[in-house]
Length: 501
Image (cartoon, rainbow, N blue to C red; front, top):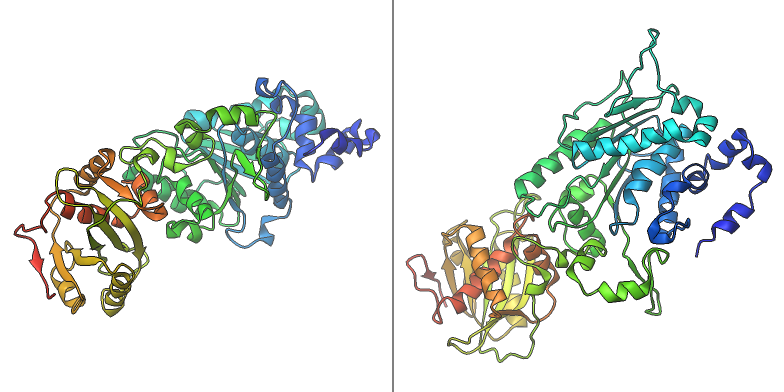
């Protein structure tokens, strides 16, 4: 555990008593800078008004120390971190105030551009920064040029507004809402050398795929290109499944994630409020604020799992939530099928081919389905797909049929999946995806669909629906379940055709 007294004990008190000494001691040490100049931001009622540090705060200071080197010594995208942490850990305090203040005071960065979910939120953050410059006596004594607005020869300030501050030292800090016009932001020939994205998606439950696409385009096409060498910090909490910060967190969780996460070189840095040692013992990420005794009283709640552990399984969504998944491996399955939602291409931006094995109990009003297997793959629509289907049929020998959605490709799939040892049927879906997903969800909530085990990719996709870039597994499972639960017999509608047995 970090001992602040020990950290301070090794410092020369004579240096601490002088502005020059304090500047020397804090130039490479953002933690000491915070303690000396911003101690009031390190105290709170939740910690008994004592200064304390989570191990996450210590790591953040280590990450910030990389910013001491000029950005020209890095490759584009080398310094892009996504901080995924519990609410209340102090993400905004550290990444929007303390670390920017340290960077500005010592000239490690000359131009910071920060963005928040709303314009009000952004200007509030900049307001906190400026209040320190105006009222912090020690800061004003040691860094007078930072704390003094730059002035024109006429005596008017260059910029000291709610959106931008320009210091006499030459430092610039601008803060805006993410939806503001940000393309090409610069001061003269200067472009930002440090970018901050703080909770840029908010926590609204009605965050739509269109909004996400727009927000992502703003980030990738408007903000990051301001300076591709700039250090970047994106901080947030996974409150919305399928949102941008959740896409990045998926990389940390070992799940499939969109290409842009790697394309834009975001490094996820995830901090769980419950830390587990190698021997299985648990400890709090910040025991001075959240004791394990308190954690154990609330850890079962959906709010805690979502807001404190960044678990999208616990988030409230328009469709599935973590509570909708129940696991049964003991049901008497009498029939099984393989449901395929195929992709017509394997391009990077195309859909996946989804394959799901669905089992069902005896026909009747009490019939239920069990999803036994779910996988999405990039396989070209040809012999490789047929071979993968044969592998699954061999792994699940009780499968008696294959059903393929043919909204794309039509009866081509009957030719591709030729000479299988089971019957192949094609189904054309004519209802909107959301309607089909709602019908499938209703079956889950009425305990008519179970999972044989945790199916991480499928469940993640269901939780993110309709925000996820792909919904192929949802479609494949929905088609397969509908065969068994919409009618006990195989679908006989006009759009269903049989292939060779």
